[in-house]
Image 1 (cartoon, rainbow, N blue to C red):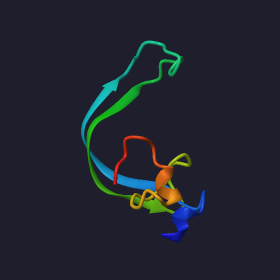
Image 2: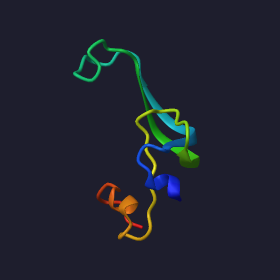
Image 3: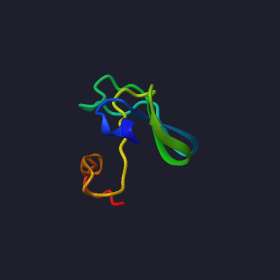
Image 4: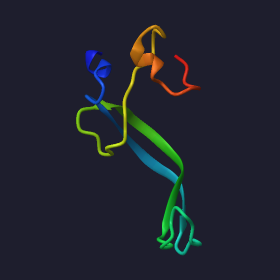
Length: 83
């Protein structure tokens, strides 16, 4: 996985089916949603595919690898993720 060792080369992508959702048409104003736009929350989904891609749908998505903890790619993983 040489591409994962190069910062910024890959993003992440996923495909899922929605099983359960919650929709609030007129939420109260909040710091996150001061204009009270309708909010949709996905409560349960079935993930059918995910992984590294060259052109991610969401620019903030990242990809990494789990394995040997001596590997610098693995050390960049958030706390709580274990191989």
